[in-house]
Length: 72
Image (cartoon, rainbow, N blue to C red):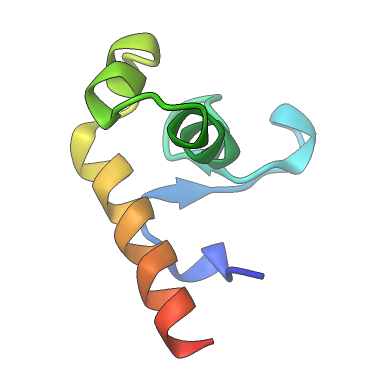
């Protein structure tokens, strides 16, 4: 499991979206990025569908996930 607490692009609050990890300043779950990519969407499509998410934050989440997998 990935430790999202070390990724500056995300936040978690029990009051928002049942405590899911969200892109900072949004109500968009990090999980939505991975679900859309797995479904065949591109990052550009994801950003179009979720305009509150900054490209830098989406890239930071992907980089964090990659680093987490490399050290696992």
